[in-house]
Length: 400
Image 1: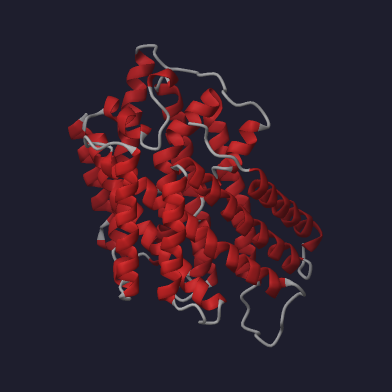
Image 2 (image 1 turned 60 degrees about the vertical axis):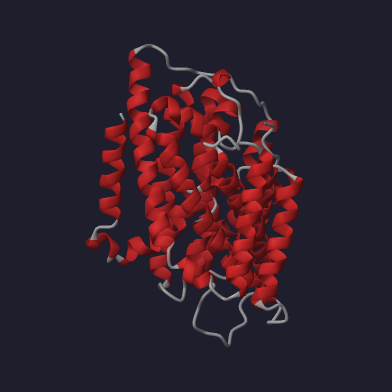
């Protein structure tokens, strides 16, 4: 099994680093949102959904992906209709104010997501050592924050962002190996008659509130909107659709395999539960997961820290320079790290992104009012805005 998984990882890495794929413009535009969507969520969702929803976990995963795709539809509409070249026209009334509010929501969502990424980094970094406890995990997280502050203060975050393709492809190759191992393990469990169908732990409305609190695990598609300096609108719209389609396929297959192959009572629900569980499949998988998690989480944290710092500088009209923006991000992140657990941070990040999606849906509804098809688009986008607000208000954390 170790050799098989290693071969799959190597083959996936060779494909992802192949010259023809690296030269493909659409793939380059797709990699950033795809890696954001299936990065950290992949580490948490298997154990969390199986523990909370049992046999219904794949349906919940499909529902999360569908909600994300609909919010993505609103953002794609905004790319197509809100980024015209006619700067003389102010656009529909209220859109500028909504865009301003949306940018503020995204800036603070990024701050919380950096805490999410770095707390996962801390937890996974100690998961295979004798220092596997909360105190040592948050110490590692704190050190990572100080590194980001130091590098950001020196103006070097952009240099670290250039490593993104390497960390992204490493993450995707590890996920390919994990899925391959799970497929074999699932087949072995099925052949032995050991597949599980655990009952649902959470009934409505608690189950819905938890799903609201997991939105950040399918977040990341919105990054396509902010790649306008590199790609035209049509490419960004296609890349968002492609990244969401691929991530939905990967997630639903992963959760279906995971949910029925493991017995719920045999593991404790923690942020690193997947490490112990994948050790049952193959000894090499925990090592691959930890290595992939460390590279990917730090890279994602750097990207969101840079995005947040840039947004805060822009929104304050340069009254808050990037250095002070990074200092604010680190101060808030350390406060979260030392006061709440990872699952609480996940719910806070989900609620922050839900607010951002609600505002983007409201912008789409406003833009749609002046377009052909507005009769059905306005209420549809309006309903999405209400859903986003509901998720922002009622999202709950996992009760580990």
